[in-house]
Picture (cartoon, rainbow, N blue to C red):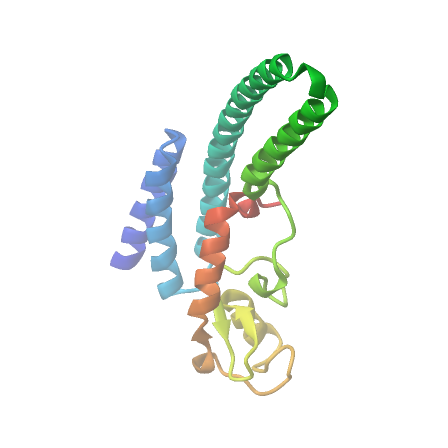
Length: 206
């Protein structure tokens, strides 16, 4: 009961902070609530509800930062292009006999500048999430991955639900499997965290 009250306190505080658009603090509180919920009952409705709010908050945080980054990049790109064109104008004035060469060099520099800024914006462009970061049952990105003795990684809550509704066996290998045999896949969990830190758009819930 005490644990649930603490969980609820972190959850409600997290939601209140998000309402005030204090994303970083709100996310921290929701993460604390999520950890407590997973320790108590990984497949409870509360854990799912907290995850939904956490994902929404992380996506909004990314969206806010992404918009800011995009504006800053566009502003910087405009400044760089203006400076480059001014330099090109001065160069063409000094090299009157080499107009074609100067124009080609100028075009190459502008293309190179464009590539640099495209590369800088890549992390904020949604792409496919790597398969190894997704559960083989839900096809969604992992939240709480566990590995079985056969070496297959699943989402913990989904696998526990499978045990309850279908039977205690590995959904892919069909071998007998007991909940006590599940081990947290910390390597995949860390890989997911690193991916989401870099690609916040992946938090978006359809």
